[in-house]
Amino acid sequence: MSMQVIGEKGRPLDRRTRIDARLAVGMARLLVTLPPRRLRRSLETARHGSRPATRDEALDARAAVVTVSARCAGRGCLQRSVATALLCRMHGSWPDWCTGIRTQPFRAHAWVEVDARAVGEPGDVTLFQTIMSVRHPAGGRT
Image (cartoon, rainbow, N blue to C red; front, side):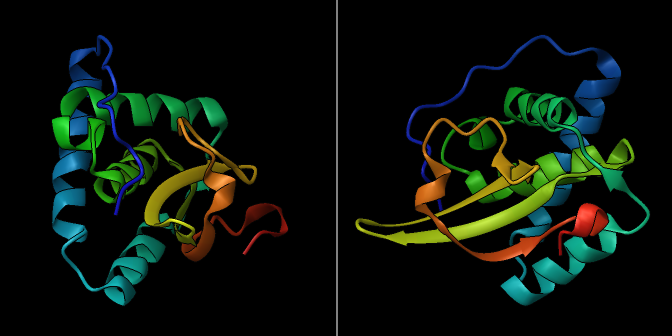
């Protein structure tokens, strides 16, 4: 599942952020092996007690994940999106986590959103039909 073709560049991270990002990437690597229903349930459980993520929080988390993981910096959109959501959650917030498909040409992709806008995605995610998501319940969103 990926839309990303060219690896993204990382950025300097402080020690604490690097450790947290590596932990989130490791947890995501395990979670993405689950069947979709169990993955969604696991993320719904993780989201409990969080506040909605801001765009800056989600961008910072995504950048940290991309910095510590070559897979997340390249074709690993599912792991990248899960790790980004988990890293946000480790800091008390939750972005909307989404997966979707498009048919012409067929592609599958996973990403995070804040205020119904994809965070840090280089392509046009609006071309994808969301098929599964774990959204923060605040603000009337489901």
